[in-house]
Image (cartoon, rainbow, N blue to C red; front, side, top):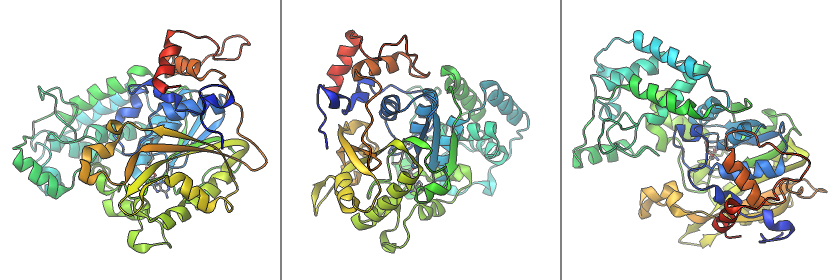
Length: 451
Ligand SMILES: C[S@@+](CC[C@H](N)C(=O)[O-])C[C@H]1O[C@@H](n2cnc3c(N)ncnc32)[C@H](O)[C@@H]1O
């Protein structure tokens, strides 16, 4: 396996995407928080290096749709698969958005048909404690009842409403982006914990106007335009990938499977799942792995053996849908536990299955994740789970093939080109191979990536 080098042929195999900085990414990415999301620059870098415009780029664990959205922005066909209804909806609205005008017209329609009514038993107590009950919650309930997730514009509004449903207040409160009491935006604390938190901190429920906040959000969402190409989101199981996507069609698979023992996507999203009318326990049950260990069956709670079985099935399916000249890039974080200390989960898991999966590991890139950027950080030390600072990006190719040469000979120049045109396909000028110009921004990108 080639080690990342600072120069020469393997130089592109380093986390160059860090040069794009934390703020990089189309505004759609931040529509709604989602745990374990990619930094958008990671899939974008691999897409630019390993695919041509028009190629199919697939993420079988698409979460909030980071990778397929980057694909569509760069003129590739992005496909996102996820079993979680929240994730699949978030992917779907970014890959097939309506226009700003359509969302504003629908919002005006909703506002016109709104008749304030007491909340009564239309919302459970754990929801009522979060929202003001004469303005905010009745408006949310009206939109919840009226918006049809099968309809493109309605789905976009619903996803955006999910994004602003809860979050921290700004200092002046009025201009807060969210609709709830002041609480984290990233995940939902448990109802019991929240009740104590609200009482202890004497939190107030301001009478936010949900229509107005959503309207403001729409102007914000569409400020950067929409992707060049439309993509496709499918709610489905990555273990049956080849029944969802045409075999041999994907030039690049770029994905991060659920981590071992870190996130329960249902439980940690219970407020947003309430908005969507989805059951938390159904979501967590659907994300579990059958057969191996029923006691720890959730995808993120599987033991190592169960995890390997899961990964083996998924990688075998990935091999089926990958083109012969394609690359499958899988990101898995290292884990730490009392028993074994720090473990390179990705490579250990691969070692246990490499003779049974029709893929070859061509390279692995270590990405030292800044802990401040990790969701687990805000749970505090006691709840940090088993995630560590290091993610591994493993690049697989088909047997008898090798990793393709990167499209950009100078990765720093690629980063510079993406930074200059983050939301549109890159334009290649003349016949020259991209990435030979060195500028101050190139030097800055090199410094940031430490290469
Ligand atoms: C680490 S997250 C991926 C986040 C994504 N990279 C992003 O940028 O938002 C893992 C995802 O796998 C999904 N998942 C878990 N088990 C699944 C399965 N069997 N099939 C499809 N998706 C699954 C979870 O719902 C979650 O969204």
